[in-house]
Length: 168
Image 1: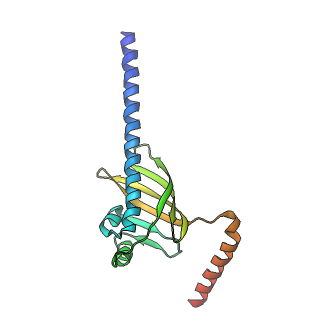
Image 2: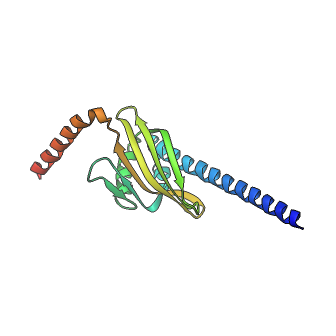
Image 3: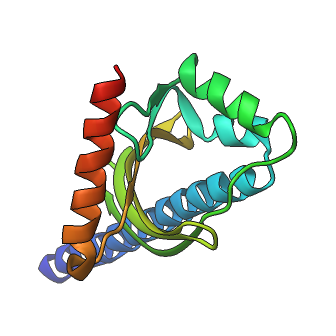
């Protein structure tokens, strides 16, 4: 009986570990598909797919200090206007990291994206599982600035903010 119990316990641990690993792999694949789909939708100016990637109250943080776009109002309006003429923007993810919560219903990500026109960016965010589907709750985009260029970039940025204040 003792051998049977040990064998049952071993089998249970093996099977449950396999299920968890499969679940994480499935979640990771789904999240990668969501994020890649977001970038594809943006490059194709596909409004429904792009906005459909976000939760109903999702937030997109742009690179300027005033760019905090929320659904359903400001983000939907900006993207609708931008995609209206059939033009979006193209960013290709070249590196991505994901961390799943213990319950596998929330994940945090960071990625490096590249725009042929604008260079390298970092996207960070939170995705949540809603009704069995992953959605973006928060996405923040920032410029990547190499340390050796930081001083010059900082000077330009400080001057631009100062000039903006003078205008207001």
